[in-house]
Length: 167
Image 1 (cartoon, rainbow, N blue to C red):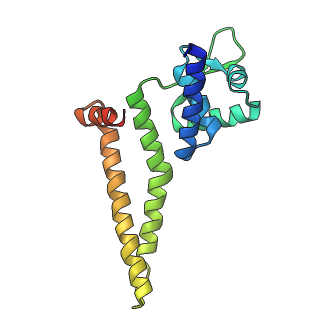
Image 2: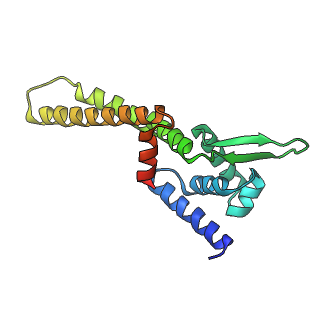
Image 3: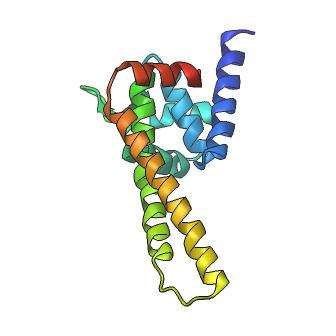
């Protein structure tokens, strides 16, 4: 397999994995391209490489910047904006974990808390709803606490062990 084949396979696979993780394919492919690029790329470079529209590239670059894993750069003498990705895999994992907690776990925890604190009316269905949503709330809260502890630890042995485990 040559460089082009390997690059295309990586970008395609990263895009498919992104879909499984709840982000759109183009967003994951842009991230993959920037992750493996030794230099920052312009929006035009990204559009040409991935065969996507300006609107698609622009919208997904904005989302990646909102996630804190892609950065905009200005080059002296250039009118174009350039983009690069966080290259430190551990830092990347921490940033993604923080964003997923903020966007997914914390809102879910709030809803589960609200639902599990409804008034008890004595019926079996209400008791079961309260019981199951409290259990889910506790599990989600525990997961969020654990994830925040790991993310907050920096480069300690737990983070290194988890990254090795994921690899």
